[in-house]
Image (cartoon, rainbow, N blue to C red):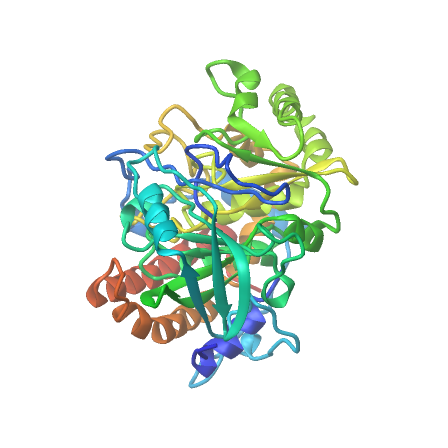
Length: 484
């Protein structure tokens, strides 16, 4: 493994070791193996986010009602309080100096070396399939051998994924590795049965999704873990990739102590769990696939939530979902202006039906279009995904709006905001971490033979990332007050 600098090793092991995949536009029904959930990117043709003014003075105005609600929450002691007084000085912030005793394959402690060997004819067919036009891509399984950090693994399966991210950089395909695809006893590094190599075609920094996922896990949500990899395929250098944990049975067992529940993914964009205006809740059923499981369970949950009165809403939500996880996802999507996630676009997530608790878990699986990416997207926290929503022009997330107005649920959502404000999103914590990633990754990105970005573009995007954190921190402080 190539080792990143000491800053990254210490910082990310402590902050981000806790515990995006691309958005769907077509079902990944060729995915063999009942324990796996796959996604395909969806991206509207010729559309970017609207209302993209990143000037904090002109956006995210906080109304008097919201400020009053926050004050009530803080006075009641219901929101968590964080004493974060780090002085970065010449060293690490105090809250990120500890290092986990145990490391895993997805700890942000360095850059893995991955070398794939594929039969030339198979690799040609692989590239031909993933480089088909938007919506017509073909993702078939192919046999390969791989070395990961010098350890050889024979006869594994590889398969493409992604649509929008794949279109952005056809020379650098996304690759999914499944170690038990052709050998049921196959297992990969650190006991993993699968992982994904993501080319980060929609994020020049290679860090938005890893950091956003870590924030989500830190405040009670669920998302796959990340590290990075330097990748070679048939002896050719393919540059740096994000190395992403697979959302599979191993993931569910680790996260929920149960790997045998029902797994659902939206196969049509703009669905979420809001009932569509056309067709009502019944229209959700053909938009989801389950492995195993009947999507009717999601339809029933959506119908019950839609039909609930404001007084009933907290109880009904609690019946069907792990509310703490749901609110964590909403909070991260809102604070990071995620324009392609569960709330804004109704996609890039997995729903896991836990047979033990009889509740759904929400797992965010594609949070790369965050931190204002792209075109400095900036959402009002009170109404982050209202019209116009250029990604899903006919959809608004009505559930978020109901939560914002609900006297029981809104304080819980604001507490999640504060957990971000005074935790991982705190500027004195996050900005040095982002800068350390920039230092560690830029040599590989600068020299990436398949890279999409120039050094100037990469550096500019890191500057924009820092600027977003600074401006958004001010928004949170205006809403919630300073950290205690």
